[in-house]
Structures are given as C-alpha cells and as structure tokens.
Length: 431
Image (tube, rainbow, N blue to C red; front, side):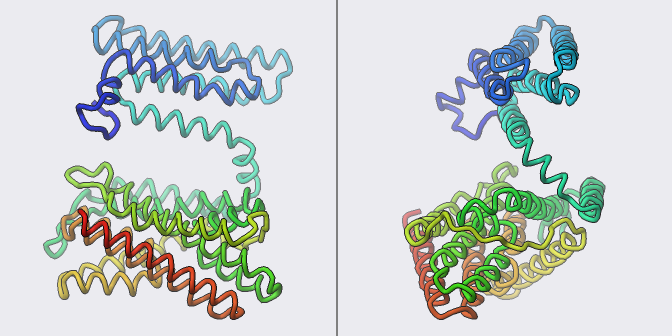
C-alpha cells in the first residue's frame, strides 16, 4: 500500500493504514479543496466538497476492505457528474459569472477522485492531487493572465516541447549499460524536462510577482535565470550607487534559488527510486546557503524595493535541447573523470562544469548515484561543489560593477560558502 515515507511502526503510518484514518484524511482533503470554492461564493463549498470526498472514501473502503458494494463507486461517480451538471445549469439560470466554465463541477469530480485514492490507500497520490487542484483554483487569475500574455511563437514552442517530451519519454529504454555503468535514459530525459519546467514555471511567477519587492525579484528571478539577476543588478547599481544594498540582496537570493533548485532535483529523483537512499545529506549544506542568503538579505536590504528583470523567454525548444546537450556533455565528462581519476576527477569536473551549469552537474550526479557509480556522500559533495562554483561565478560577474557592490557580493558569498562547507564537514564527521 502506498503511504507516506514513514517508519512502518509509527503512529501516523498505522493510523493512515486503518479505514478510520483514511476516512478522516479524505474528509479533510475535501474540505481543503472546498475552501477556494467557498471563498469564491460558488454553489458548492466546504461542506459539499468534504462530503463528496468522504462518501467516495466510504464506498472505496467498503469495496476494498469488506468486499461489498462494488457498484457503489460507479454510481457515486455518476451522481457527482449529474450534480455538477445541475450546479452548472443552476448557475446559468441565475446569471452566475463563468457559470459555463464548469470549474466547480469538475472540482467536485476531483474531490470524489481524491476520496477514492485515499480510501484505496494511495495516500500520497490523493494528497498530491488535492494540493495541485487547489493551486489551480487559487491561481485562476494568474494562470489566465499568463496564458493570455503568451505570444503565438511562445505558444507554438510550448506545444512542440510538450509533444516532444511525451513522445520521447516512452520510446527511451528504462536502463542501458554504457561502459559498464548503468544509465537510465528515461530518467535522464525526465530530468531535462523537469529543469525546463522549473524555468517555465518561474518565468510565469516572475511575470506575475516580480514587481512585488526585491525578495520576489531576486529569488524568483534566480530560479528562472540567476545570471540574468546579476546582469540586471549590475546595470542598476551603475545607474544608482545607493542601490547597492538591495542589489547585493538580490544576488544572494538568486544564489538561494539556485541552491533550492539543485536540492529539489537531488531529492525528487532519489526519494522514490527503488533501492536508492534519498540524498538527505544534501539538505544541511544547501539549506545553509538558502537560509544564510535570506538572513543576510533580510538584515541588509529594504525588501520593498523592486527591480524589473528582463528574462529571456524559456518557451523555446532550442533552449531545452541546448540544456539537454550541456547535460549530456557534463554526464559524459563526469563519467570519464570518475573512471580515469577517481573521486578527485569527479570533484574537479564538478567545479569546472558548475561554472557553466550547476543544474547540469546536479542532474548528472544524481544519475551516477542512481546507477551505483558514486556513493551518497560523494554525490552530495559533488552537488555542493557545483553549487559553490555557481556562487563564485556570480561573484565574479559582480566584480565588473562598482567597487562597493562587488566587495559586498564577494564577502557574503565567501561567508555563505564557508558556512556551507563547515556544515558539510560537521555532517561528515558526526555521521
């Protein structure tokens, strides 16, 4: 049964494994889904959504655990569909705005599906569907605004990329042995798609929220393109010397975003891999960079300041394939360096490659770790070295700016790397 990654003997795991626990969770997730509909004053709100998820879980538990009422699930789903249609018709007759969008009707069906998933024991899947669905409801205005702002070329590039992503993935083999090393082409392609997806999502976020203070500008801009953040801040401090404080903060927050992205890649592709221990050890050193960057930015800058960043649109198949090419080169170089020079060669390659793309090094390292080529500690060290190299690159770029700006970026960058290194060293000693 799919449950959260908990110890088998823990109370929460035992509770969620019981029918009562699954019923309670289903009702809670339905309530969570209904919050936005209630706030938007729609025909169906918290109670309707919660009851819909609960009844779906009841039917599923009855079928799964008691073996009775197998037709109940189909009947319940049909009733939810009929109820959704009636709500849409009622909204149309009353002149309700967007009545024909059927958002509430589809959301009710999603709530029913969440109840079925949780009732069947697929807790993580049920929670994920509920959270993603709730985000889609809450971000309605932002999503419509972003989609409406796309150019025809961006829309075409997105469609081409989506088609290529879904066509290529099933064609690729699951595993291949290359020079005695286990290589996972599907996972590699999924990583490329994930990194591209992160860029697209954060491009959307920076267009929606980039003007809401230096925190959003630096962090969201860093997730989309940390180099663009540094370039924008350089231009800004050259025009206004008094902008150095929050320009430094933006660069540090871009470093934090880069560390968050690398950590997310390291955990996402090892957390559910069979026979592979998640790279939990990457959390303390990369977390130190993230928390340290936010702390310094909070203490030294006015977060109300805002700067517009001119980001290159990520809706380009060429950009995605370019990252894929860089990733393959880094993967090949890391493999050769490890085979010829051992761990020291891998570390040296990570530093050099990290000057170009720390995300590429992270994805390549995770693949090597999944294939058993490197240990968990070596993988964490490699990712940390690539992240450090990226921080150094930003400090080097900042050196082209005014002396005060360059000095502060270099000083705080060295301090962050020192703390991260100290955390990683202490972790290795006490492990």
